Length: 361
Image (cartoon, rainbow, N blue to C red; front, side):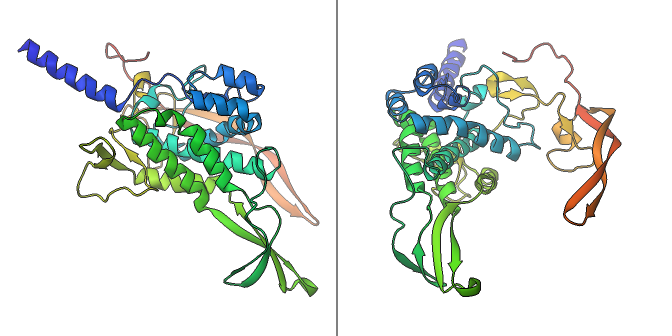
């Protein structure tokens, strides 16, 4: 009987290793060394595969853009999850940035891969338009005349070269996953692609009118990316509607885990594992727990004290802070406010009671 249990445990362990391979570092770490010289950056980001390191040395300006972009998409991730138990927290001195979370195949991991891939596209495309990258510039295909539902116009200005951003992001970000043939690699590739598509979805046409008294007898137009927040909001909706999948029998793709749900499209996020509850500190699960987190006493959502604190209760402290008040508009053109002391209650989640052991490695 013991041998049977051991065999079952060994089989389950192999399956988990197959779905969640050991990952010790990520290109996300470029955000930590992003201000370094390119060669220093390339040599100090552990875990880059050969192609990523080649691209890093060959395109130093692009790497600088990617490094600076990491903080932007990380901030967007934290904005989207600000009211949730897992709040896209990053770990200091951790080469994977998000700790063991990236080893899991959860919905949160799916979102992180999608938003990070989108962030690379956004950062590179913006740098191209600003003339910061020698290997690209404005979109060269937006030349001459064209038509839309308002009539004819001339391409002018600097259209964002998003196709260059997508091509480079695909080559660099996907390089590590392309080397793997397991389920997790396929999941990451799918979510990376969904992230890239999300940025292009919000590319919009902007125009400037030319003519007598501001009339639009002539128009000059260009394509521009919108604020990254729109991409973040869109991927957040995709996160909430993410589809759980399983590998198909030949190991070349995946199908839905629940046949009642539709097959995922190229813009959907996919995941394999159910998420942990993130209530307790557990670094192997990528969770810092919710002890000490601020909660909303009057909310009924994810930020409520009942949900955020996992039923453990909360502490209330009264604080006094300086705020602007009695603001008035003065002609012309200033708003003047007074400094007022405001007293308010802040609610923070209680720490869990000691139960003997928790996985806090």
